[in-house]
Image 1 (cartoon, helix red, strand yellow):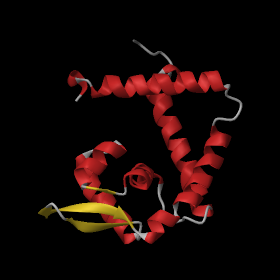
Image 2 (cartoon, helix red, strand yellow):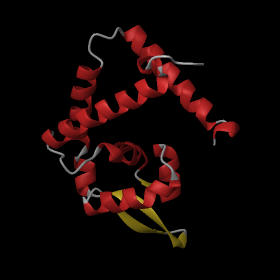
Image 3 (tube, helix red, strand yellow):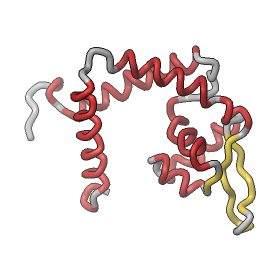
Length: 150
């Protein structure tokens, strides 16, 4: 697959979209009443809003994050008072990650900001095209997780 123009390269397009949406989310979150929430925290927050308490390794898997980035991310989220580490009752050597009251209360403002930003971001894109885009992106993620891509 050869691309003669940068604008035809899927990697270029995906990376530019990622940067543009992340920038919009940063601004939207800052204005939403949850300025301590950063776009990088969203996967962890969504997971904990559903799961309540997980070991860091399991949290990383469910949030789609690499193990090498979890410790630093959780440190930053702890400093922002969004999560806390608690002892694992089944294993004294391990910890679990839970939301703080601030992390729980961030749900509404974060969802509002994300909804607003994504409605603007995906405006004028027919629902059918958006469904196709999501299906294609899920396939790309699956392809990248295959043995040869690790």
